[in-house]
Length: 262
Ligand code: BTN
Image (cartoon, rainbow, N blue to C red; front, top):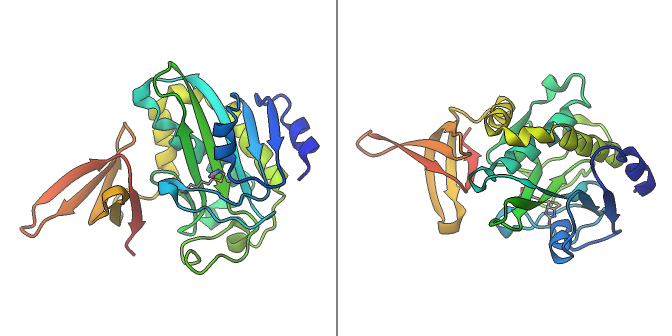
């Protein structure tokens, strides 16, 4: 990776420094273990123990993709911390869409809570971790994984996973993509004070409302069939289910996973 070029390009962005390793277990884990300060970015072309939500493995072929973490501290009310996930997924999608003048043809969308989809397959995910929930100034480790130039995926994920290259045929410069994302992240940072606005921006990039889905609250393995009614103002997802007597019931969930029923 052209580390010097990345650093120079991001000099006035708001980012302090870029920490680079040619390989690393996980950029999130590194930031946590080394108590990395706010406004630093950790990046590696080879993450050999990358983790996703629910502690799943995040697979990424060496040199093909972006795997990085941004450390960011800011004042935010505990009830609003959920918005960080929505913010970063919106920002990453915005940065990517801006590369494509004709992005409409590609169908980039966001899926609750923070998946990035291209033609309904996942090409990116976010794992943000809050370090100090009790302090006024909260520190987040925002981990971003984007499948960029990878062409093949292991059998168990190949039906659901894709990359930018796989769907568009374009080979991307990882550095350019990273620089765009970080610039967007800082240029829009004040949005974090306006949760409604972020949610509206997020929703306008998502196509989940009214979709029939399977919902898994992974922790206790309940799977339900239902229809997505809304993403509520507190980030929860409102799902409509119908029981055997045809009664409709509405529930709001704050964690879990949805998959579309086509
Ligand atoms: C998910 O969709 O489940 C989230 C995936 C997040 C992966 C990124 S890659 C960089 C950072 N380090 C990790 O170990 N995970 C995140």
